[in-house]
Length: 529
Figure 1 (cartoon, one colour):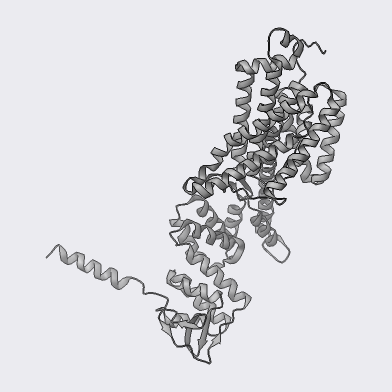
Figure 2 (cartoon, helix red, strand yellow):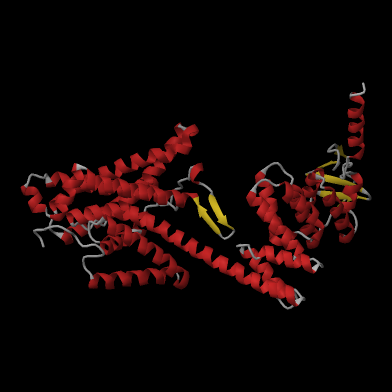
């Protein structure tokens, strides 16, 4: 009994000293009846108590679903009314009036909801709440609860955001030391919103103290410098992302153009077929294997490769084989094939774009800073391009097929004389190049719309990459795609997309006039040379 008695006494003290539930009928009335100042005072008491039980009522209040009759408050849902505290059905008086919220009141309620949601066990809810408070809705009355939420927050991203919210609030404090500390903290930020907020405080009607104003000016410069660095990184990443697409699209063309000298105007349509193959595989998985839908893209890769390789080999066997040595006829024939393939796709799938959904593991993004967000699909496509490039390098340098392809590319006549089956190598190489184009189509389906005109947007850039890098040269294709991708994105930020494309085209034309062999010249003895 002596051991149990102290425990019972401690439990009784804990129960008696625990704060009572802040949200009751009187609180609901105070939040709904009276002028804005009175209601905001009641709202601040709810925030100070940190009573999450008030959240549902506040959400209905901001949603204009609350009515009052005298001192009684009702939550209305259609033609039914319930008690805001107990949730039990209630009789709605005929003279009940709507609660009218001014813009100021709405802002205060929205901020209060965000503050109370910081204690939610759901990370997504806390993240949205922190983002809402970061936009500038919080004032000094919310500071204690924000600090408490920051102290117990385990997620580093949300904790950093709450630290910024705290600094935002303290930036308007009457205490000069708090304002200086807040400016110092915000100077480490990389958020455009922080820059705007500091700029507003630096305005003539903002901060009055000269020392704090000097600190704000230095903080603005620090944030701007950090934003510039992140913008540079973002532009480089976007350029590399574009380069990875150009590399995938041009790899196949580099093989066919380098091996056979064929200007294949249907190369873009082979990419389109790869993208539509992805669309078909997606629909089959959705219809017959819904539980494995997240893996449809893995199945789409070999399907797209085989389908486009088959189409390419058929084109080479049925059309191009009879036109070798006649460049103009080959160009016109492949252009006609491209028109035929586009019309065939329109007939089967319709003229409108079709939707290809990213699997879950390709959705979302990684946030390196407030102003630097890298999408997963772009990151994965860059890695995929590197993998395909590695596969092509191994195939061309370490296999018998690659040896034959390089021999035919350097000297077709001599290769035929030593027993290389050049006709079969032509077919296999054209199929390989077409299959790589199909893989490019799979990648393109994950970052944009899939339609009959998909390939037309990339064919010119593909030829620029191949010609600039050097015909049949993998290293040249890589460097040319990187150069064109990064330069294009930097120019777009200065001149706009159209002017940037024109400038890149002019550069390539001038470069080829000065160095017709491209970045990397063909090596080895050639009978044609």
